[in-house]
Image (tube, rainbow, N blue to C red):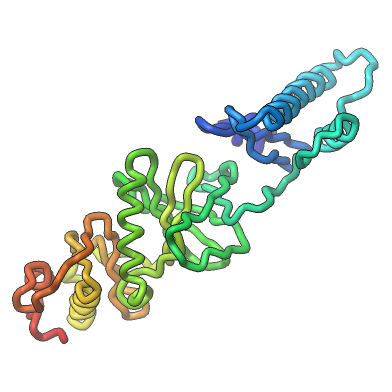
Length: 300
């Protein structure tokens, strides 16, 4: 709501926060200037002093600007642009913190939601260290549409010019997302050939995000696929089994056909440690083949 008021020119100053941190946002003409994030409970006295000083100055600038707009400034100098005022104030007080700017430095990845039709405040995400995927990105991650509103919502968007899909988890559900990310780690040898290529796991603003390449839409049913495509689904499932993973939720909504390749999606119910007894003995392969309308022994 605050962000929408700023971009729609309803206000010039805003404070956007979550339960741990906040940022100061100032609109000047067509630009939005965003501060570094501040913590509600700074770790030391120096950080606490800088936080209170910046916040006090920001509030004072907001009041002065409002009085200036209402013609009640009574001939005193206008407060002027916030970045200039902050720079001058900090110079007088020898405060070493960064001035407010339109960029957020040292951010490995910025996330912007546009699902409501208006860009959200950019969230700074951090890479989860336990995964070793290449997580170097030159542009923000922009999420444009909600494609699945289940317990863990799934969004479609773009990053570095490519279409991507992001699964999001908050609070207690973050552990479930991390479990699914671990599955993708086990399946790295078949990323892009039987399962989506996973680009990384990120955290920020109390949530976690699993980033994957977009492999397209799911079919309405297995029977809407050609025979070769249905065989491809079973081949992909067997490739997953060979890496010790059982899917546990094979359905048409959990597959996609990308460049004639059957890609299996959604490993939220999957388990590691599966020892597959073979196509003619494995329950998941037998049941999957029946649902696909093929003989499991026909697929090598």
